[in-house]
Length: 168
Image (cartoon, rainbow, N blue to C red; front, side):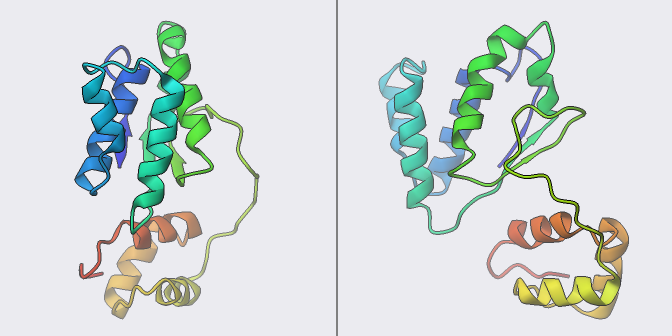
């Protein structure tokens, strides 16, 4: 799931919860969306929404990756007050779903800071094979050129691939 943060459009709790609920429903988990509909589209109880989101995430056969693009928009002064509940909700979900937060500044405290060096081409291929992503040498060269051998990007690529989808 990718959420691109835009000031005053989707930086509030309702937008984040509704987007997550719709995505979870598309994956077969409807508890959060059911509550959102029962509450007339409002998030009346953020803790209940959080619990339902956790339950829906736990029920999925395949764990999704939650990508928040331009996450630092949630820290902008003119949206800070409306975005605070959304930031708290996302922060509370960190233990339940892997998140990729992209932006100029961090919005949550990281679990760990780890310096990981980029992999050379052959090691990148070994890593992708270990992640069950078998690819030919030309595709590996293109992927390595695009990612620079960054292990997080290689892992993200492998996780985003759907079952049965060609890795080429």
